[in-house]
Image (cartoon, rainbow, N blue to C red):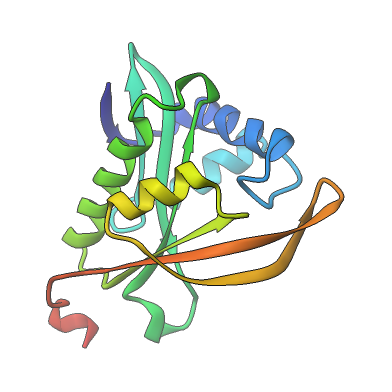
Length: 170
């Protein structure tokens, strides 16, 4: 398995992995699958600090992860939110661990102080993965999303950087 920066040519495979979760799980609160055009636009916005990386096995994308701005106001510029999705046929193979490890390196390299994870209904495997990478539970948003005919809570986890932020953020 190799983890590398996502490319526009990965859009179809990224969308397929994501759309399986849109249609068949509560891993995301999206209700409508992403079109290829939407996925391409989303990927074009993911470079540099707001990166998207993919895990590839035998030239097939088997998972992806990204960093996104946490909130639009300038004071939040040192905080990001992560997303991780692994093809269902590759759960339990260490794909999420490799992806999150690479994302945390990118976050540290770009001087982000705080990385957030929002985990719907506290999925145990996702919680453990984030704990392994230094995230701690900081709260629960009660019944903030409705999918598949029922309300869902979101567990909020956070990882604080151990390094001093660049002077540009002070």
